[in-house]
Length: 238
Image 1 (cartoon, rainbow, N blue to C red):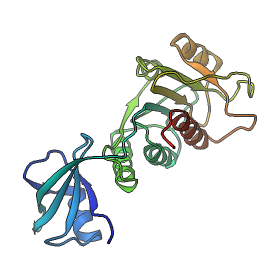
Image 2 (image 1 turned 180 degrees about the vertical axis):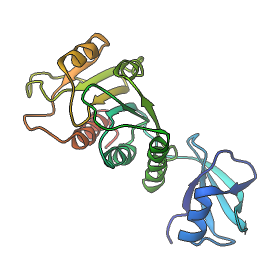
Image 3 (image 1 turned 90 degrees about the vertical axis):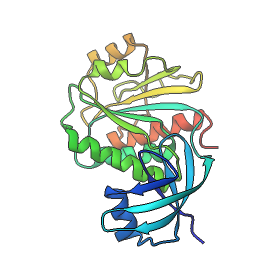
């Protein structure tokens, strides 16, 4: 028997009304009906067992039967900051970062960034985060936020034990760093990379420059690779 399908809702009570996009997916794609079991998620880390009590034209009534703590959330706190990418590449990074266990994702604009963000794109990225969280059986979907400047981006990392800034122009192997504590903020640029001046501003904000080897990686590859490395060093891939 397959595991119960998972849905994010705003608020949990004894009776929960599933509506909007989640309802349409449950009804039209999954074809759930009365008596089917589901799992509800409210972003708190808890998971709620529920049963479909009634299906109506514009919603589905669910009866909550139990509560448990989700066991797949990371213990380490990782913030991924990625320059806005062209096409659907940012969506790919959000999806994979969610699967790997990142807690929060910031998308930003910088000097050489050629892509742009708007409210619809940001909502789309948060939807990708929720879908990825359900797929990999997480209980919390990382929030995706947007920063219009590099200064805002760097400030968002205040309080993290380790702060890494990936630069393609750093000599391969020239900078080695060990992660400290159980939190880490990682900055990866867009397709255009960073300027020397932006790197220096990051250093002034407490970031350590790192290289990802002698080959030039695509921005989305770099973001996913460094996320996997950080999560592994923090013990989240064991």
